[in-house]
Image (tube, rainbow, N blue to C red; front, side, top):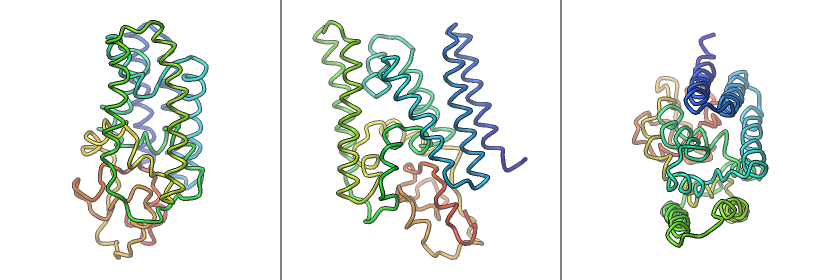
Amino acid sequence: MKKYTIPIVLLIVFETIAITLWLTKNNLFYLFNFSYIGISISLGMFLLIRKYKYARRIVQLLVGLYMFVYLGLISHENMQIEGFWYYLFTGVFEAATIHYVVAKIFGPLVFGRGWCGYACWTAMVLDFLPYKVPDKSRKKLGWIRYLTFAASLIFVAALFLAKVTNIERIMFLAFIIGNAVYYVFGIALALIFKDNRAFCKYICPVAVFLKPMSYYSLMRVKCDKEKCISCGKCKRICPMNVDVTDNSRKRVNGTECILCMECVRNCPQKAL
């Protein structure tokens, strides 16, 4: 049972969040929402441990489609970063603010950028593209994400400063248009750089939240130096160009690891 510790712990964490929010907010939705996400992620980790090839893809579809289709398209909740700013400005701890606090601000202290690997509905689509292994070295374009981050904040702030009416309707339209733009740019960048995760590396504004806390993540891929033969395969197949052979927190692209476990699955010496 020891090898199933991670999925069990993750399930307990999400169930604790689910029950706490249900009781404090007096809203049964939070019990369902975080229980569903916790069960989906734990199931994926269980299947990953069982070496099921499509374990991560199953989680991506279970969580990504739920958040994009049900919460976004059906319930009209903007779960993008604009929705976070919107609820933050209105002073309401609901929907996107809770989602960001759990998944993208404090959650990374536990599971790093696991959100990017298992639950992001943008990456869910991009990972269907054929460029799963980066064809070229990483570009120094990460600064672009700070521009998109600032643009999302300025957009929502301008709506409030201008006292725009029917702002909730605008937030829903922003969700639709924003996702369409993300998919267009994400697919275009993947084709240009031959890298499914180019959008995640250079454009995605959510990484601005994820990166600082991910530095201190409890869940990390580590290397057994006695087993490692320095073949370099883990570096070549890593979709985020992380040097997982370095166990320090200052390793190359250390805050970019999405816990996809491709390095672990492909290590010939089982050193990771």
